[in-house]
Length: 325
Ligand SMILES: Nc1nc2c(ncn2[C@@H]2O[C@H](COP(=O)(O)OP(=O)(O)OP(=O)(O)O)[C@@H](O)[C@H]2O)c(=O)[nH]1
Image (cartoon, rainbow, N blue to C red; front, side, top):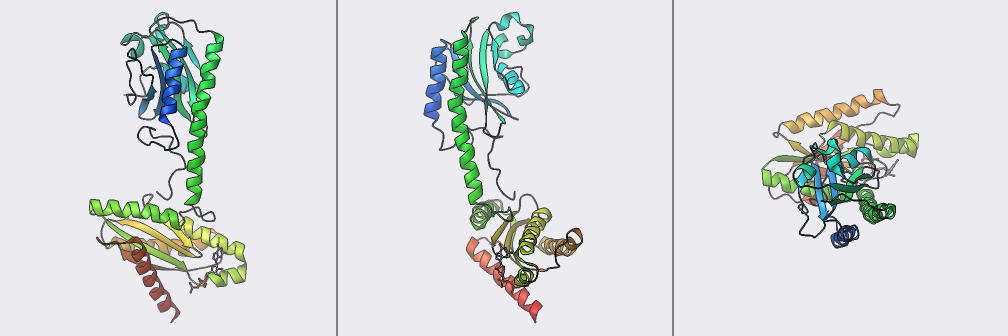
C-alpha cells in the first residue's frame, strides 16, 4: 500500500465506525421510518462484495433482523434489486409475483411488502438501501413514497461528511507534488508496519534515498524539470517496490521506503533493482540523467522510527561521500 484509499466504500461501516456519524441519529431516523409507515420492520442496509449487512434495524419486536446481520450477495433480496438497478423499488404484494418466490424474506419470514430506496456514497457508489417491510400487502400513498426519498437524504449527507473528511485526511498525509506519503503519512503507516512486523517476527528494512547534485539539475534545467525528476523518483520507487511497502517523500530531494524482506540478502537485490530502474528510466523520458544515493538499515526489535531514519540517512551520506571522493 503506497497510500490509503480516500474513502473505504468496500468495508462495512459497522466494522469501520466513523466518529462523524451519529448512530443514535440514524437509529431514530430508521425507527421514525417504520413508525410513519406503520411497518413492522425498517432498515438501513449496506452492500459490499461480502453481502448485505443490516447497519441499522428498527427497534421493534416484530422485526426479525437485527443490526449486524449479513446476507450473502447472491441471495434474491429486495435490497439486491435496489442496489443492482440504483432505483426505488416498491413491491406491494410479493406473494403474487413469482420472481420473489426464492426470496427468503418472503418464503421464510413471510414478508409481503417492500419499499426501498438506494442510498449512495458521495462518490456515486451504492452504499445500500433504506427500506421498510411489512407482513401485509400495502398501498402506500405517493406522499409516503416521497417521504422515504427525503429521509434518505439525511443519511446521504452524513455519508458525504465522511467522504469530505476522508479526502481532507488523505490530503494531510500526501505529498502534493509526488503523490506519495509526506513525512506525516509515512510516519503513521511505517509505525503501523513496524509494530506488525515485530508481532509477526518478520523482517523490514528502511531505505533512505537522496538525489545526487539535485541543485545542479534545478540550476541547469529549471525548477519544472527538477519537479519532474522528483516525480520520476517517486514513481520508480512506487513501481519497483511491492504494493505493501511504504514510500514517502521527507521533503526536498529526500525519499524513504520501508520494505518487507524475505531474508537479509533480499535487501541487496532490492537496491540493485532500484538502481537499475533509475538507470534505465532515462530511456523512457526526456529527463536529464541523475543518480540516487541509497542508505539503509534493518528494523531491529528495539527500533524507533526516528532513529531508523537517522541511521539510514547517515548510511546514505557515507555512500554519497564515497561517491564524491
Ligand atoms: N524542483 C524542486 N526543487 C526542490 C524542491 N524542494 C527542494 N528543492 C531543491 O532541492 C535542492 C536540494 O539541494 P541540496 O540539499 O544541496 O542537495 P543536492 O544538490 O542534491 O546535493 P547532494 O545531496 O549533496 O548531492 C535545493 O536546491 C532545493 O531548492 C522541489 O519541490 N522542487
